Amino acid sequence: MALSRDGSKLYSFGKDDKGQLGIGQRDRQCPKRCETVPQLVRFPGQETVILTDIACGDNHAVAISHGNNVYTWGFGEVDATGHQTADEVDIWAPTILNLQPHVQQDLSTLCIAGGGSRTLLVVANRDA
Image (cartoon, rainbow, N blue to C red; front, side):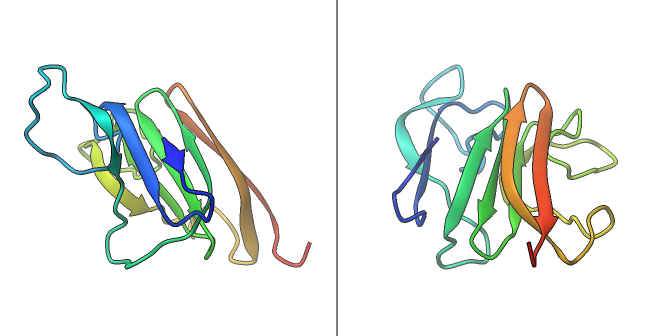
């Protein structure tokens, strides 16, 4: 993935068999479901989302917006995206992660990391 300096544009490229590029499902010429040219990642329901941090796991991705929303997308079978669905489906576009049941409202996400089938969020009090 590549993020513009001002955080307003995110591009992804490479293998996309599990939604890890965040560009939606589409027919591709590449038999291995890949994108060789960087593709603009669009954030549903938003005209412009300013991102402050991005990270990738093996088959998923995560981003934090200036408004402190955490978006995840990609491989859904082991809940690496945090979107616990009954059928563990892949997430093909950036989707806001609902942290309310797990993280107090007065906390902000400071940074993120992705690895293998895991996502790590570092949070702190908003007043800190």
